[in-house]
Image: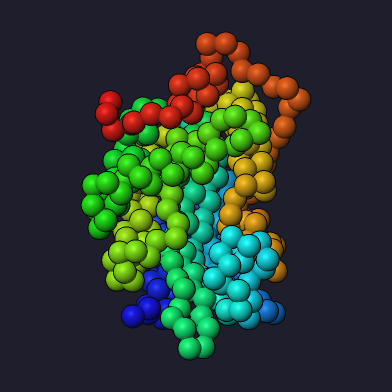
Length: 302
């Protein structure tokens, strides 16, 4: 049985838990809460921390939107959804740090259900989390992927390999021919294990996010940096913006379904830059990011 109310209750609690955890490690900033309603149906609760002690911008958004029909972009891919009403809910977050030695992180867990009188609902879970460093550290990558693997326990050992590969393929900036970061987990259209097991897995991913990210932040937030590192951070943030606006499914779905633009685009960094034909100095730490860290690899075999 599909329990929409239970999913919503979990997601709203997850938003509370993550915001509290991020405020604790930031030490200076607090999230502001912006509750909103969507004219076409549903609404949400956006929370944003700006210019904190550790985080330049952290956005943690809960949304629950509904409608009588889906946009053509959705039904073209899933024709069985034509003529169905829908509900989509989830928690989505992006954390952009002040210190370039602290990576940006992203997490999303979501649930979709489409209903039609006289027919069984069509539903699925999706989500994952991924890490986008500016300066790489092997121990951080190994920790991130070990927690990612631990999060996959409800579905068994094979799930990590499958969803890590999917993450590497999904968070790829095709026009730059490079990954966005060092990956993690990505899954979508999950329903075959049944509702209870699928919901359990989605909760596991959401519950492991702070465990994956907070230790990395603690290790790197005090590292000294200067103008060079900040300039490089802005350039790499530009890659992040490019991916979100060109390829990201959640961003595109939100905009195409008349979602709240301010909430959808809260994932974008406050300070970002583009330099024409910028290239890192050969052999530099900036070059090492793309030459070594942004390469497909099995971090847990090290």
